[in-house]
Length: 289
Image (cartoon, rainbow, N blue to C red; front, side):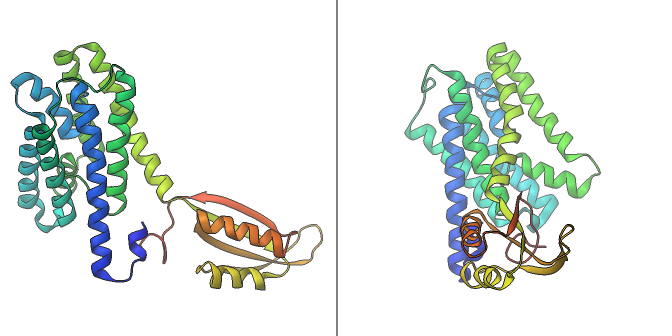
């Protein structure tokens, strides 16, 4: 994320928590305005909240608050400081925000008469927020804490365990709300993970260049001085002409890639350029080792 490039540690920390706050509010909008009113029962604690709210009359936002608080307590008991300050902040901010919204802006019915449209927002908003949180090393708590506990203290397959939790809330939705809401919840469960994975991949997407050229000097200078990136240069030979060639290997963000491609076309139009996508690059300037 962009916060990694901020040098001042205080400013970087403030930017991280600002990003966490923004991400949580995106999630809260999707959960409160689209998920709760339609009784979509997918996705961890908030999924169970919709079922509990119908069965007991208890507020879905308050139930989320109490369960998240209890899970944080369990996290500190079994994980200690591994829970992380960011996760605590994100979990409590989401729980409090949902409870406050229920009191300031109570909803008695869905915003529209288009459940499929609202399902899209109920999936996309929390998915986008979760993806941003995961990308900066935080989470919204809830069932993520259960996953952390299982990972540390058991050999259980975490993905399977969390899927069982989510499936349980979806199955309950069939019995509590009927087949229509149950099927919408099932669709939401299937789409949620796809949205999170796709958003994370697009946020981290970089362009990898393999440039076969005759004059690497100007290109390397442009990469280093103008784009503030580095490159690896190695010698090669054309299979047909047997002439000496130079291959430049470089990786950069999408905006920088456009500039480099245009520059190469200008200074050496005969260069052969192979550009590929990658969303997981480990090393200096990208993901930490």
